Length: 204
Length: 204
Image 1: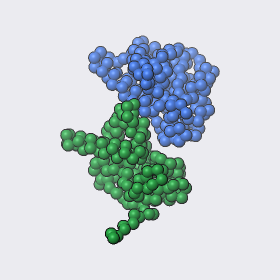
Image 2 (image 1 turned 90 degrees about the horizontal axis):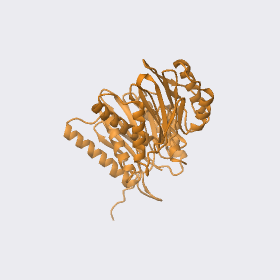
Image 3 (image 1 turned 90 degrees about the vertical axis):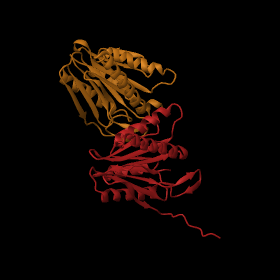
Image 4 (image 1 turned 30 degrees about the horizontal axis):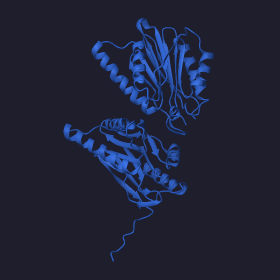
């Protein structure tokens, strides 16, 4: 079995009208066995920047700790938060540093940039960035997620509609993947507020 | 065939482990204590490769004591868990320890907590958890009978039922178990569950 499929994960981020949503599944497994159903994959970097880390859970945790460390140093030096584009380059550089012994993670980065323009991107485990204007996906359920998002996505959705769309896309995709699921976690960020919601899907 | 499992109850956490020290087909001893008292209010149940288990858990214990000597206060359970994960993660890509850990502790303001730490340094806070082949039985039993806020009697009853299940269904089931508990009064042995006792042979 591939090392990327050891723990199981599903991540998706979508762009709406002056807002973005990032969602993940909640299963932590060890191959066929489920250890926990409340595992967090989406982490906050600052109020308007979130990163989701799919793949091997231990590397996701290590990478998150390194990213928070680097961002805190940046905040001390620059006296401001990092822009999402800058953060994406930071993640890419950290991953490529380990080119011949990589972190087995595929990050999904979502944030509101200057003038609250939403930004999303994903990259592979070596840091190859993929910028998208509509949605990005990652994890063991990524192929199902591509299909679900492509069919359900519309540009310029309002926050409520965006929440509904990303939830349905996530739940439909993880139901076809045995290694991810056990509920969903959706984070919806607009310039004025952040909403966190837990989804109840097929608990299996 | 090592079995370690644990759960959180009302104001306490309990960790149980088998007590066989096995090398290939030979049972060296049946009273090997695999649940270490990390400090006055913490338990560390470990399973895995023999030398690594003792070496790594003693290393963690001594570092915890060192912190307490230097700073005058003990580490919280969360801090101890994160320190342990850090040590495992640092060693992972150099000289990995093959030790799985359940860390249980009681903090005055937080109450009881239980942490699952994989041998590849995956850390997660849980209410119930298990390692080893015994986990296939113990996790299912706990899924069925565990509920948050169990009393000590209820929890030990469940632990005994799990031990009975492991003894009857696991092919080379360990004969003896030790049960340890941690609550506001500290960490201590709750009891042994022995079905084979080492015989004292009289001297010639």
